[in-house]
Image 1: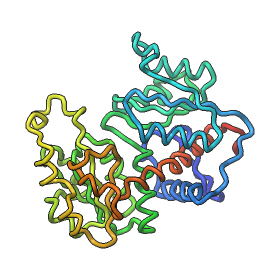
Image 2: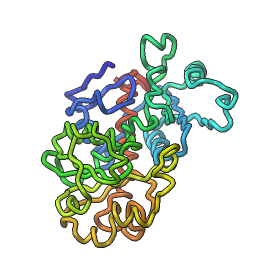
Image 3: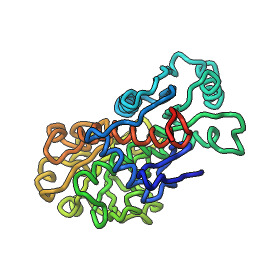
Length: 323
């Protein structure tokens, strides 16, 4: 995939935005700076040509969907509604054919969330796709990647600490089923943070050992700079024998941030969660709006980071008259 930096302008240009794996550290830093610029009231790029975008969410979403639409409207894009529940997907239409329709009617970019890992390969791979001329932004693929959540998390950490190098970050919970965890562990490592893992060992895999070390939660709590909690994803536990014996209260006691653990955190430690939060499971419900919890700020930052991501694709595809 082709990437280029408009270094003098500190801007990034991308044909699609489907993963953080191929982003350089410099590109990540540029996206964070651009998102912070938008958040601080910086001017949005001036469109001289109309741009049409559609949010195609084949899995339920509130934060990501709404955040993308707000970002699109702030940038002056025309949002074309799409509802999979009332589309020809129910008649057997493939994702590729749906994208072909979007392209044919003039949609320039499609933001897609889909249950299939790496669904985008059929849409952007030159050997598989010879006809589509539409930008793809990945809003989450199965248990694979969640680039926009990952980058808004990086923005939130950077906003609080001003750097990544040497920060101790714990990723806790349903790790094997979390696309957020997979995106974040890889990027945090490249940015210089020290990554640790905790949570039920049956939701952990040795493949993550190359990014960090698994430890018991109570050992990590007083040492971490960032506690990154993950939602227990019951909808992805089909066939998992541990799902039948799952007990929310027991999980919270062993793997959640309760009041006792909250008091043991360092003064400057922050708590993060991609949402939705299972109250009194991953986090005590009355701590969601506590001083250390960044949940609301993450959602706020998501709008501005998604603006930066969309702008990168606008530039990469030479849309809107941007140069």
